[in-house]
Length: 72
Image 1 (cartoon, one colour):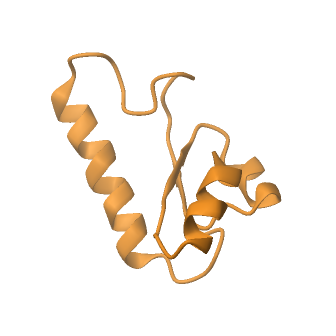
Image 2: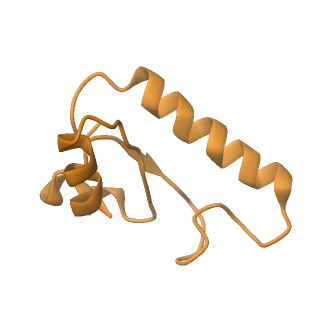
């Protein structure tokens, strides 16, 4: 996802990558990273768990609003 985020960022659109392995994202140039402690394939949590999904979305938006440097 970091590669896709980088291309989108080059088009002028800000992105946040949700990653279960955040240490690897800087190697592909991910601009902003939100580390997620969820199983692979479910970065927003379990199906039907709206509270957790909202919390992940709010966290990602906080990263978007506060990250000041690439890879943060």
